[in-house]
Amino acid sequence: MADNLLNRVIATIKRHDLLRKGDRVLVACSGGPDSVTLLRVLYAIKDIYKLDLYLAHINHKLRGKDSDLDQSFVKDLATELKLPFYLKTISVRKLAKQKSMSIEEAARNARYRFLESLASKLKLDKIATGHNQNDQAETVLMRLLRGTGPAGLAGIPVKRGKIIRPLLEVSRTEILDYLKRNKIKYRTDKSNLKSDFLRNKVRNHLLPQLQKEYNPNLALILSQTALVTSQLNEFVQKRVSFLAKKTINKLNQNVVILNLKSLRRVHPILQKNLIRLAWEKLEGQVHPPDFKEVERVLYLANSGTSGQRVNLKKGWWAENGKDRLFLFRQKAKRVNLRIPVEKKVTVPGLGLEINSEVLERSKLPRRIFSLTENVAYLDYEKFTARPLLRNWQVGDRFKPLGMSGTKKLSDFFVDLKVPRHQRDQIPVLSSNGKIAWVVGYRISEDFKVRPESCKVLLLEAKKLNRST
Image (cartoon, rainbow, N blue to C red; front, side, top):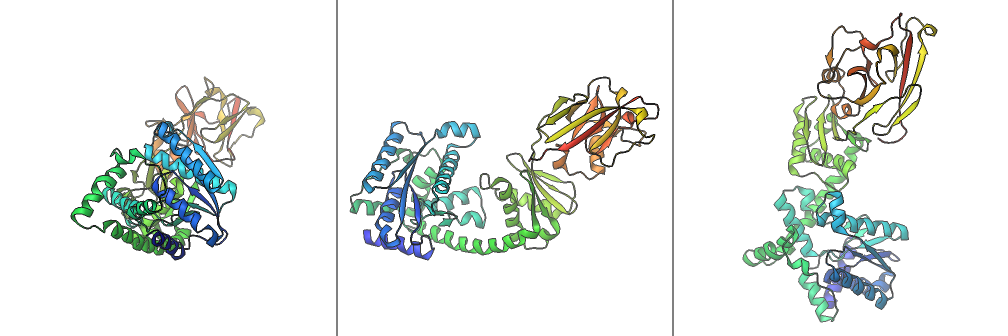
């Protein structure tokens, strides 16, 4: 049986091109049965593939003394096999609280961040993890329970970037049998026996029940389904990557734009994948969109209603423009700043630099105009207090230059077709509650320079040379 497992892993490696001769491989080892089997198998074939192995362990500090015993066990393994050993200790509970994540999510993110950083630092070719066939089946079931599409049903990829999973086609029963037959010791994580998390509930209750009452080979079937779906998804993604070049444009770290004409032209399955890809350009894989969110964005994209928006999650929104769809983070930073006269002031919350200068009216031309809305000439004597730079607010009104009456600022933005995702980043300059300048757009008729004005306040707003 041991030789059979070894041969099956080698077949997986060849089938999916997981290893090349001379590869330098970082092996993630928790001390549990899966990762210990992974380590032993890779060690057994290291001469065949001329591998250099490196051992990494992450102590999540979740199980007190047991976590420390896991660490010592893996360190002893590294000593026994004469492999370089790398350790990362992190308080996952503290991290989860800081990042407002579940403990599972925080642990996973910390784990992969450490492994990828270490592999990059050591210039390693691969990162091997111990996911097996049962992990794959559990993942597919979990995603079915939550609702998913082809990408979710593809489950855990056997290869992604540097990360490889040589045991993904081997069952947990085969792994335990391999360890027993070869009298190989490993650590048992007793928390896996509890049903605190969804994965443990699926592992300890749902999957065994389905295997008992419906199909004992369910783990294999789900794993095979994931493989077929993964291959189909790979085919679709190649087409999506090609289409993305003329459909998706990342404006900055908070905004991605989709060309609606290009998006509407393709099949709905490609539309959905383009939306997912656009989301990933903003969020990575941290908070992937679920089925309902993708459907909501898709409906918005095909509705043809300009200005309509939908709230997604984690502060993200989608909004229809005339010919573009915006995915963006609602990330307005509050600003309430008195602007010193004849000084330069930086407003990091808005990524702006404001320069101000007071000029004698008599030294300026009779007709004053600026070539850009980022420069404003204002009647200095109209300011009864030092100018206040603040965020615009719902209900704000001002008298746009050239108008006799006031206008709601929200209506002003609509008339200028300013996308909603940009509006929260537009500040106003005011004095005693009256808006003098919608920065970058228009000055107020009440604050314009007249022939009889004595002094002029010259203001210039410049974008800082960094992302806001």
